[in-house]
Image (tube, rainbow, N blue to C red):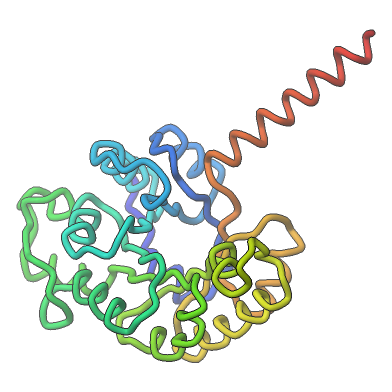
Length: 261
């Protein structure tokens, strides 16, 4: 088993990082992502599979491949945060983070005292089922857990300075699709207004030493967002990669069949 790469150390390096979203919860796809040299895995529990067994299998496989895996929460809940951290995720990301109270609650749920209020247990997978020094375990957890926010509402844009200055926040994911719906009332993630908001959030992230993340659809967007301060790029989801591959294969099949006719 490889030692998992510290996601926090990757973020602090300021190196551009590419990731894929995992919705299907298939361990084989995690292994393929690692073999393809993807930097991190974004496990979308809000929209994807929520089975505990699948989530643990994905975390176990990612850790075995040395691939950092962070989980997007289905809802703000301290018990859900603890469960995901205990099975091996390096952190969680809260969707629709709009208030300081929400963010402070997530930070507290992610850390042990004196930095938070997470309930202690080492009989878990990350505690090596009890075969670990408790004090060392607490220190390592508090130092390495990632706390992420989804900036995807007009309210979050208005409160961004306060949200991203909360101590313990490491990552901000700009969800441009939901952001466009909130700001414009329509799906337009590449609207100039949304792009301006993305630049604004990236600037605040840089000010508070918070890593900035967004999804991209093409190479041009990678260059555009990197230029304004985005560090993490979500390239696609396992569902989208499978769909695109099937579509390309079907088109190639049709082209060859028709060319014979």
